[in-house]
Length: 266
Length: 215
Image (cartoon, rainbow over all chains, first blue to last red; front, side):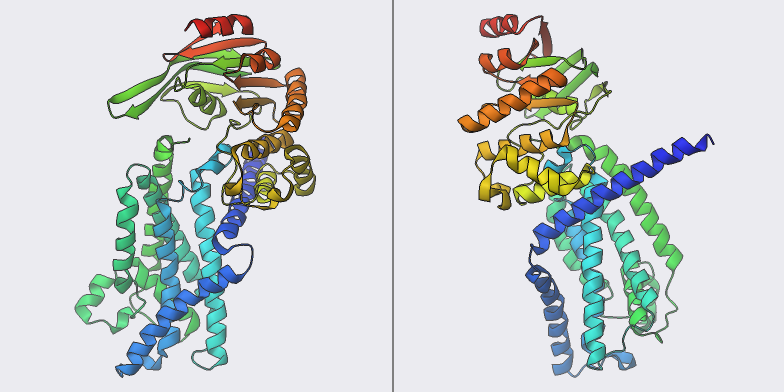
């Protein structure tokens, strides 16, 4: 009986935050993809161009992809998984600067702004993934996602991991503009290590041991297993990735709390 | 009621930290209307941002027992990349208000015409101020923080603004920054001057204005 009011307060707080994040997602949607859907079409063009280019290189150099996988879907699925990482990390340091006017409304907080950005990215990349795998299945290049839950689960894991990372970058970004400049080359340099171009199973044994410590190739592997259901990996450690994501999120939330007083308003 | 207790706020400058609010304590009761004066750069806007909760003080605390608007100035509260209407929808969503009636109220007050559906970046300073004020009036706060935007806009808007603010003065709470003695006499009952990080209070607006010109 006594618990009731406390629960009410909690529920009301949760509803309020959902409302705020929803409004922020719509606001992000408007400025990133525009009011017309042409913006989302452009969003699809980039991964297609990149994966298409890589496939053209593998085709002209007669490099076969192991396990009989088709180059285009293999690279495209890998790249879309990486896109969440890249966009969320790249935008994190400057996202407050471009949204701080909204913090004039006291219910809009820094974690809300970061979350809205990464949720939108999750939605957009998931749509792109479903659309492309559907088209590839239509052309017989790859199966229609055979374990859809694993595909969605992998993308969710990437969202969680990169949201924690984005919060940390965002907090650090309030202390120095250098953070924003360093993040961009870092995300590009991390592309070869992301798992876009390989499966851990295909690496030489000594590299496999090291690759196990990287979360990105593992998450990419989970997403790929969602499409090609018979893929199997001995190098998946979901608990390890979840712990990393949890630690990053905790540090990120803490960092944003400390960095709040660094945000300047005109 | 809004109560500030020993609030300290500093800003970093190339020659060390500058003290903007030096142990400021005061209380604004419900129904009061307070005018604020001070030289450019004295920290009036900083004080407003602290009262609204936008900027956290370095030390001290701020208590609020009523809803307080965001600081209504030429900046903040509306996003430049969005249209006026999209900003209004955003505000409706985060405050949990119905969208259509709010859009009507804002458009009726701000009178932006076709600009309502254009990005705020394309607005003049006066139009921005009208939108910001229109939005905050539609949300219906207990206390309004007005930072020098009453003089914005044309004759018709000044008239609308006057009607709305007089009504708020009668029923709500008002804290207002202005350099214009006429405006302060019109809207405020008491006054305070911010100088050198210290706030000095005056029983009447006329006393404040006199002291301000003697600064």
